[in-house]
Length: 218
Image (cartoon, rainbow, N blue to C red; front, top):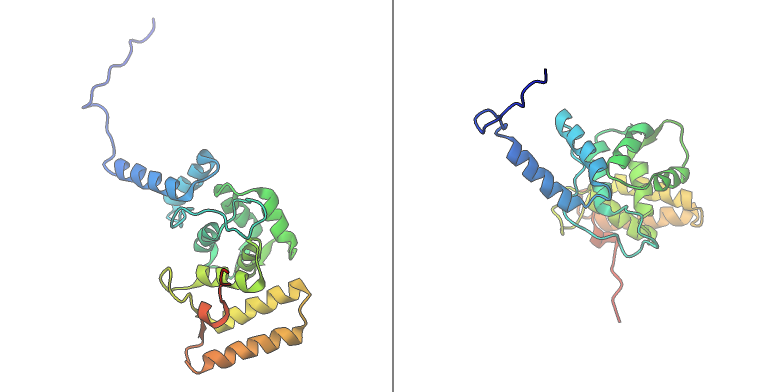
């Protein structure tokens, strides 16, 4: 004999009091991040939320930068999210990066292309991965360093985007070596000139105004 249909009334349905706020924050995060695959991104979002990990959420809505030849989905905002999730480690497992990359619905072929720029086996130094990601946004080496500074800085958005000169010079040398077109002597001369300019402040920090000048439109 079939069981009778169960009847529910409002008093029988328990709604956790925190659910409305969770859904509200999730909706705001989805609007800011604009994931290509909402279901895939949502799985990563709620997995991170349940573990107390940094969420795969951008700070604001953004468009791909103009220097990219094609829309890869990778933006400075996406790299900021990855840095928030992985930047606390010096070396990061490639499998962990791949998992977070998928959660952001970024194309896997772009991740493979990025890693091929400096092949490694199982782990990669995070600052190098971030630098390679910035290089994939396009532009000159100084533009790459601008993006890196804006991701790493503790300054508020729109500020000088300062980072330690030690970090700046480490990444600049790394990318220059990978590029191969700039002699090491030229790289060292350039870094020495930057260091001379910032030494007077005795802060050990370098900001955008020290090396990056926007081209003026005619």
